[in-house]
Amino acid sequence: MHKNQTLGEFIIENQSSFPYSSGELSSLLNALRLAAKVVNHEVNKAGLVDLFGNSGDINIQGESQQKLDIFANEIFIQALVNREIVCGIVSEENDEFIAINGSDKRHSSKYVVLMDPLDGSSNIDVNVSVGTIFSIYRRISPVGTPVTQEDFLQAGNNQVAAGYVIYGTSTMLVFTTGDGVNGFTLNPALGTFYLSHANIKFPEEGNIYSVNEGNYSNFPQGVKDYIKYCQKIEENRPYASRYIGSMVSDVHRNMIKGGIYMYPSSFPYPEGKLRLLYECNPIAFIVEQAGGKATDGKQRILDLKPNDIHQRRPFFCGNTEMVNKLENFIAKY
Ligand code: P6P
Image (cartoon, rainbow, N blue to C red; front, top):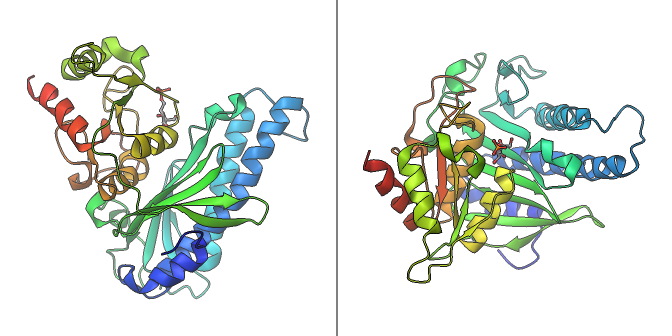
């Protein structure tokens, strides 16, 4: 690993350390890299369209977000299908999982991908950063047979890789294969991702809390108590409240500056709003690899056994000491 290494060089250099390395995971990561560039171009252009309000079929009434969600979904699916390395995909945009039989019809691919192709897309028409989140597992059903629901309902501990793309003031691809977290920034002039944030780790302490306080009255009491603890001015504890409404952006900032992201159960989300398989699990994997902690308030996210591909879960992640403090408040009730 060296400064300004390209993502492509990094993948090649580390291929032998990827779990079950047989080149397929590298090819999978390269497919995601390509899709991220294509989506980045479109996401930026959409901002332009909003500015002038004229375009072919993209209007400014928020449908462009839906179109961009669908566009991003199609780009990532196509990139993965073309490489014939994935036997199935779960996406927030698709009610059912997508079985990919490959041109050889022998179901020989070993990996499944779960993703939120464009998280926070309602922010695009106000020019706020959005993200793609992905989670990669090896299939558990036998190679050579069609992919099954069980291949997608694995505990987060089984992930072989996870990452996100943040389409922000700059576009970054941040991912882990279980050996630390590395961030690559896109040089749009060259269309190349360069290593810009090697081995990302949470700072020892954090003082940022990220939560939609508009839902405060519906939060569990322990979460309310923790928020009041953050707001209490004593010992000159300088907490700051920062909430973008785009989890990838909030988590990315908190990982670098120190902080906690919270999406508790609340009305109208009694199970929380975030999806366990393709939002909580990949972010939890990354957060833990960066030295942080991710729970549902009581249990470690990566230990949870999913029972539905679109199930939701309360989600708290960030600096270990901040998450521990929150859990102590929750444990009182
Ligand atoms: P609310 C975006 O829709 C998202 O899934 C996360 O990226 C974000 O943190 C959260 O929902 C925002 O939800 O209810 O606070 O607007």
